[in-house]
Length: 268
Image (cartoon, rainbow, N blue to C red):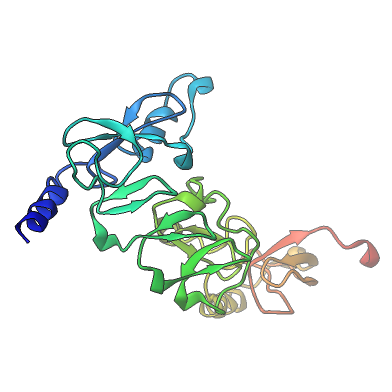
């Protein structure tokens, strides 16, 4: 019993005392791409993608990591959970596939075989959408518009690759994805259209009602009394409506999220 207790103490030594701004862990990695030592892959990527010479910029492939350095005893060794020299757990959570270590298990890390990488938040709270190609909250099961491989793209606002981003993401009504913080920033700037497809990101019916009232109260001069062709970004229908400086309402879905276009050939 005493021996078991001593072993537990040795494995727990230094827990949550080492690491970087990204992870609490008791090891560093040797990057196989440049042979340099970094606290984690994010530290590597931040340093290497900001190099002055674009030819030298690169990112690490997490699965290619072969060597780690124990932060407690500085022993360099092959990837493993327990240090071969001092016997400490180099990460309370350890994934041999992703070569991922983390002492902060309150994140509820788990490895998704379909994604091929580790996620956070608890396995029971997420499901893998085969069409979108990523894990989503169980609240979105059968409750989101699938866009094939939508997460394997860059955030349309900050351009960070969404699939491997550690930031929270959200799915818009159109099925496209972006970071939650980018979505909120867009809303704060009164931008409510998807940056990719231009569809409305939220229910705009109340705004359209207010615009109806403003248009009725704002008569256009006689010289501007003519019709224009519009394309609706929300329903993708085309129609001809009276020109108004404040906006053009789609006659199919009542949206003002429209744009002027040239007359269709069959209506010229």
